[in-house]
Length: 273
Image (tube, rainbow, N blue to C red):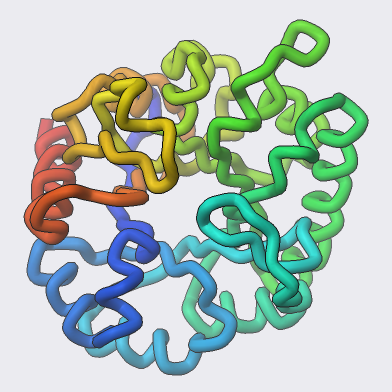
């Protein structure tokens, strides 16, 4: 088990059920609650904060974390391409986060072109630190969520996410996506150990890591937690200050809710142990 005195809270990133959520939020959230999820991680929540807050309340769901762009001026599409859609202001994001009962707002994605040099990474850290200062006035924290591009290259003998962590204010958290870290080719467990108590959340996402299936977006290799090649259990054990274990699929070739139930069962078994 981790060195934390309590097990992390199990959650689910709502991007996983994005099509279901847009079609019928009540049905989607109800099915997640029926599986046993009590906590969710919303995305793109500013435009629908009131509606989402009411739906979460109806289904007995909490949203302590959420994803919103904090260091990019415009939305970035899930495939990494830029858009001309302006991101909400920090004050708008944090007001919506408070309405939803969040405690941490997490930057979900930054342009890979911003991760080529130490100077670029430190500039991103400065932007996140500024966002964290504003968040604090709302009683909130800020975090950063990685993909592969923060970890797939060597910069001055270190990986980009580690350089970012060094430049962030101590109160800024990291949410390490374990699948994308594994995709980047790093030793995920060792990475978690080096990042230490900065890691307050992880995305519990598994996959075969089959090179023939991961070249496109969305990747085609993702499987229920514990069924793939990502060392999820060992990584969770290595996270000394973990607060949230967040299930997510970028894509899932199967019955989505069954896959989510299997991942929930994986985490429930670990908590019981």
